[in-house]
Amino acid sequence: MISLQILSHRNILQTKTHLTFPISFGPFNSILQKRWKKPIDSAQTRLENRTRDTTLDKLMANLKKLKIILQIHQLMTDRKRGPFVSVQLMSRWTNVIGLNVTMGTFLRKYPHVFEVFTHPVRRNLCCRLTCKMRDLISEEEGVVKECELDAVRRVKKLLMMSNTGRLQVHALRLIRRELGLPEDFRESILGKFAGDFRLLDLETVELVDTHDDDDYANLGVAAVEKWREKEYTEKWLSEFETRFAFPINFPTGYKIEAGFRGKLRNWQRLPYLKPYERKEVVRVRTCGGIERFEKRAVGIIHELLNLTVEKMVEVERLAHFRKDYGMVVNVRELLLKHPGIFYISTKGTAQTVFLREAFSKGCLIEPNPIYVVRQKILDLMLLGCRNTRELRCREVIKEGSDNVVGQVDREIKKGSDNVVGTRDGDWAISILEGFGGGNPSDNLSQEFH
Image (cartoon, rainbow, N blue to C red):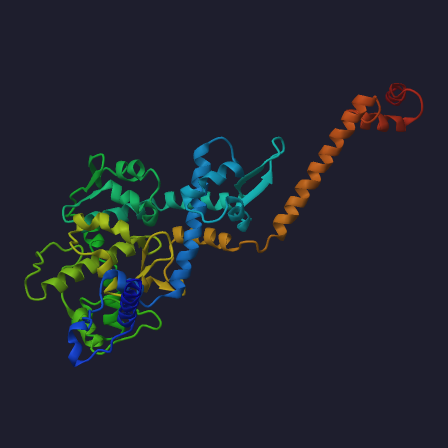
């Protein structure tokens, strides 16, 4: 009986081992053949398989570090207990700002931005911003105030692109830094220029109806129209080729498939409703309606990126403008369909879209005053631990002055304890003794008499 059980168990093992071997597919075992699945083509797969732009990715990685530095500065200013904060307290902020290293290691990576020193009384490590960093931050705030009229112009153009002439204040607050707006833009911009903006409630702003003004007609021209005019006049291209075209600039290494050039040429010629036009309603079910609808969304995003200071914005924040601008499309899929116009970088904490035509070798082709100041801050951060000889010389001078003061204090303390040593006014006695022996007051009376 036991032998029969062993044999049956052995047969079961043999059948299991035979089934684990790969089966050769053929016409006589079609039931066992695996069904071929079509590869998934989604926004995520296109994002992973896209041609990467290493220059813009490197720029985004540096901007991610700068964003962490600005978050630390904001947390330091919110405390309002002094110009410095202890490193022990700052170590609690690692999870808040998303640091993957210790706070002390991060601070010592940027000696031109952060100054780490020992507190003279408590003898613990403290941190504060360097003078250069503080000057650049104050300079940026001053430039933002000087460019107030440009900020008003940007907000007006954003409201003009809306279907109802209204926008949510929360949406503007999300891209406040990208638009170059001050922190209190609700009072300093929207409330101050009451002739241009009207606050319907706490979170809705409306553009005042000024269609008869000449300024309104000038604002209703998209930035891409300048490029089209230049292509028409300088390159002698026909109006049919340039009237609805966009500048295309593919990244290095982009593979152009067969038939792609023809499709791109037809898309460039396709007419669409421009961002500031309200003459007709785009019907999706008409001939070319879907393509025209998507091309209008491309024109709106293109104009919005042109209105930003650094020609970039996070993809998630564009979703807050979909309803007001009538973009009933998947924004990320739309951006990935046009790699010659937009580029999505995933190097930061969020996906960021760049306007490709505005950049050359990682820098803006046409910089503005706010961008110039922010570039100075980025350059100061990128110095890292280089060129720190000047900082070391300052520290040595400071330590020497502290040692001299400490030595004098110790001598005074020693003199008070042993009734021997230097005291306040001893230097005057040595000078008076030079007049001669005896009482110095007698010598003084002789000199004056």
